[in-house]
Length: 110
Image (cartoon, rainbow, N blue to C red):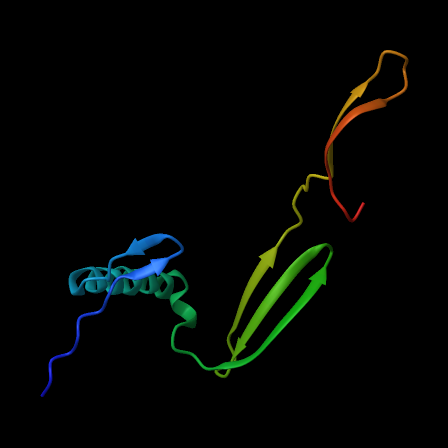
């Protein structure tokens, strides 16, 4: 059986990147596996269940995300509204009127 040729360095723009070694690849795969294992432990109630449907709705300003499973159980996540930055301005109030000297940020939908 012929030997597998060694991979060559990859070029990213003007920078030459060396190939990933087998040891580095194993380390990356291990860290990815550990990361996914942490995700699986976060909500153990839903691990391995078959999904029936997903529903979302807003009630009294709260967003509900509801996940229904085939065994009749339901997993619900609720989001409350937050305080959003609408604008940042610097103004001169000497005359009693707000004379805007600098407008640093203005949200586009307002």
